[in-house]
Image (tube, rainbow, N blue to C red):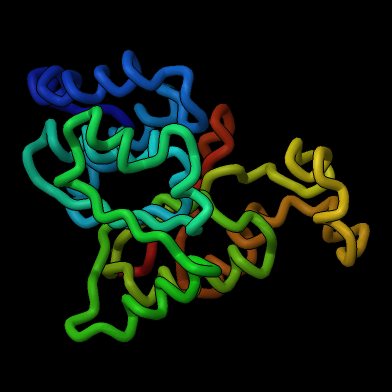
Length: 226
């Protein structure tokens, strides 16, 4: 079930969540429909420690932080590249304006989020997350290796939410504007829906169950074996 079962609880979690839509509705990339699905997942899973791969402006991070703040507990760790500091607005500006900075630890990676995940894996004690929202490095290499590292940080029974299941270099507006970025890739890799390929091949190999595909928003949900 994808909606909060207690109507009173559902009303309770609307205030800050709706504030994000009102304040940052036109900011890329997460839309309210996507955020609503994520909210229901977080509440149903009672997810309190959340990992996000890829935040861009920080709108998705603000939605997640609002969900946690409305509920009164939880923390988000989110990772993106150092270039995200130059976005207007940047994540720190968005979170400060929303009054949600205390719910989020934003990590800016020098080169790749995979090295930041390595740092987490190497910590003692190692952080453990209940849920990961995965929206970074859509290519096969980044996504495939990235989920392997996320798996090492995810509790048994935890879930990974994949964004852009139907993404490919061939259909990506970014790659169309920057065709040189696709040089060196074979034609079948340019055409492949690489996030979906990871979801369908690597996740079952790691023992995950493919819980659900939310086709209207291009998401896939996989659950780690308990």
